[in-house]
Image 1: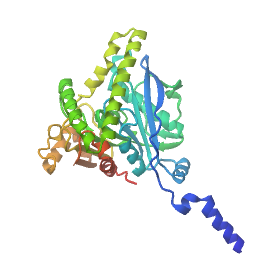
Image 2: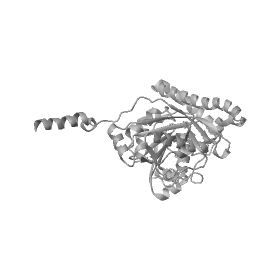
Image 3: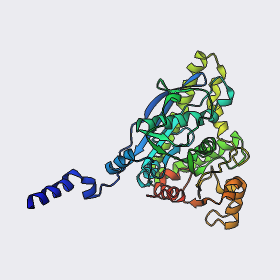
Image 4: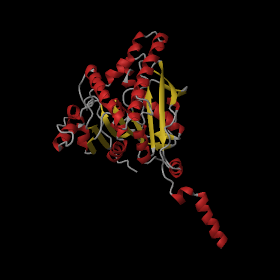
Length: 375
């Protein structure tokens, strides 16, 4: 009998370390950015992604055996020109503290193929969804409720995405967008209503009717203000964001030159300009309703001069938004969602346009609480 007890004890201590010691999630080192070749709308695009998976061994085993991923997989839509690992302080904390533990950050060059209907962000919403499906398929996970929005085929690294089976563990999507990503995430949510269950906006574009000139002036001024954070302990954050947008816009523009020659389409040289124009798009229920989601949260930064909460959301005192102003915001931009009486969260938090990076803890926690995804 003592031997049996010792054997059982050894099994639970050595054979089941997660049960014995309570394995904790850990944020991994910044992952390598993976590259993809995407064929869509008569052209080939460069795409990039990272996947952050902080699930414990026990959680992965349970997900593999279960029929549905708890909560939902987070898809983070980056700010304009940013690369997947930019804002890793924010996206990794979403993974660590979120119910599912999985965050995918996909980006791609600006689509500018044959059919003009699918250029710019219209094409991005297609390509980015297929990247998400491609990544999750590698993990044995399918997007629950996915329905293609075009019959136009998409190929990733030579794999026809129409042939990917809908099998394995099922997962809904939670869309999180920063800056230009706010517009992309709303478009994405509108395009795939049966797959996306929650939407979160952080320092988001899409809430003001402005032109490219004002956008560039606002962005330029905000960049100058953010640069002073180098002297306040945020040099790494500032330089990282600057280098990210330089690589993003520079790479997209540089790749446009040979593609315009190969495809005999000189207008492709201006696709970066199309990307900037798409960043000025005004979004409300008239063009992109998002009825059907369970949670919606919008976060502005108090010191953001690019996406100013006073101009974009009608908040007179960012430090103390009134309930009347917040109700007016929801009624103006999301009347169909208000009618459904879902959970709405509006916040104005400290920081600048770079706040998801410089204040990553509070922004990640606010997103997760607003989406009911805090583990």
